[in-house]
Image (cartoon, rainbow, N blue to C red; front, side, top):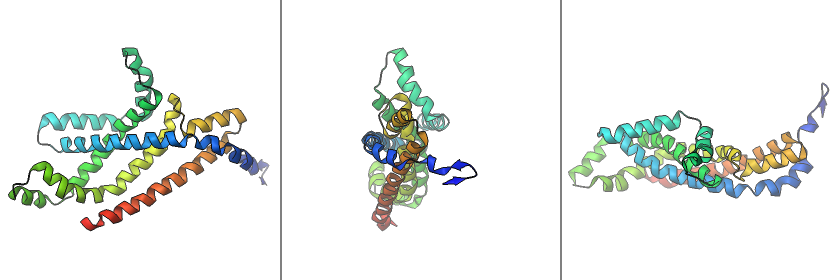
Length: 227
């Protein structure tokens, strides 16, 4: 298609995209592995940060606030460079994959902590008081009564965090992690057709995120009984 002297047909080469698809998809396992590990780290650390952030004890609350502020206020790319290129200066070395998992996990924990905190705070405080009147321990109350209800509220924003992690793993290409975007860049540099390859990788990320949204809907229905 030619419009005003510009050849739109040159934007995307379907033959190159099809031939390159297996090689590009070979980076998908690394992308998903980083995403799941990072999300797991973020969920565990984020819950503890949320509880510390809402604590009455200054020794817990302020370190949590500082951590959350720092992670939310600094680019993840800078943090990846610190982990992969900076720490070896002081004798601490990570593989590219480990650095990516640690970086995205610690970074996502800050956002998850704020989601968890707001979800926990949305639960009626009377439920805490009722559990206390029954002499139910704090962590048992949290696990049995509060967390199931808070989880239902937190599912949509937590899903958004997971989607952001999946897409942000493309930044791991700069520290040589062989994930989707790094594989795409290899082909783009070899074939001198960056536009085709970037469109292709965008069309791969899209259905992955659609699948995540599908599981979000299933989880929301599962936890709807706690309404």
